[in-house]
Length: 382
Image (tube, rainbow, N blue to C red):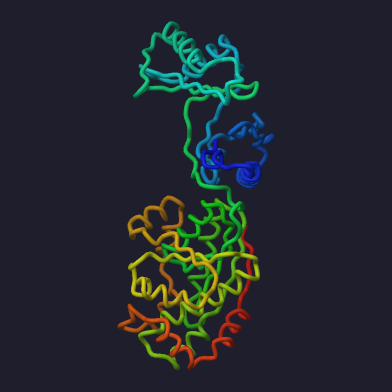
């Protein structure tokens, strides 16, 4: 079931179709031969399983990673007939140990002849009489959900939360700058959850650093592919640019000038892949380069939107989300980040755009950007 998509207007079908496609692709990759079909009904999608090969645990784990799903439930089909619903509810609850219960029925629209109140009362009375259990509407020991739509009814015991949000692909394409640290993969995930397809760019300083950050980034993207299945990665050499910056500019501005070049290069890649925004893992005030003044000064070099999904997160919130999505243990593996190379003891915390522009007059900006773009290697990670 999806909640947010249900609020869409005339383009709702577009969102529903993309969610259906994403579910099919996810199950095909992670649970081969498990799904017979995914069909769209009023406000929900029904996955029909191949019973002989369906591994419900694997299917559940896969569906938990599909943005756009508010919740889902393993259910069996019943009929919109009171006697059949009574029997099926009894069979469902017979598999559980409980002292109290509730029946939670709903119908898609008023065209369905059975009323919700009637189903709740009649099926609930049947369970009380046949199983000798008590009704508890606020804290039941067991729940029996009955969903009725079109000419079908489904009975199930629980709703398993999905990630919510929007299906990947409905919001266009973005380019995420992935460092190998804790923050940037979380920012990329949050963009996916809002329906964006994410293309990744990683800046590295090999041979001045080890290639460990590159391997980390590949592993991170493999983990993030749980949510978008397939990703493109650009690996860009920043070391030649950093070397020039180190020899020609003041030390306190180095990191900010690094980041300005990274944004310039990322913008060019974004335009090449028809992306419409850049994603960073910046969190307001977390480090010196992420003060409000510095972020403004750095961001002046691009006309493209810069989205910062983590701007209001504190570090612990970011760590908690990284653990949830499975990237935290990868992020804390040791490596040498490109921005840690040639870092000054006292970096500027309130740099003005004109100060950075005066430093960059000493550099051949266009040539250095072209150097970075020429160095880019492209990988497809499935």
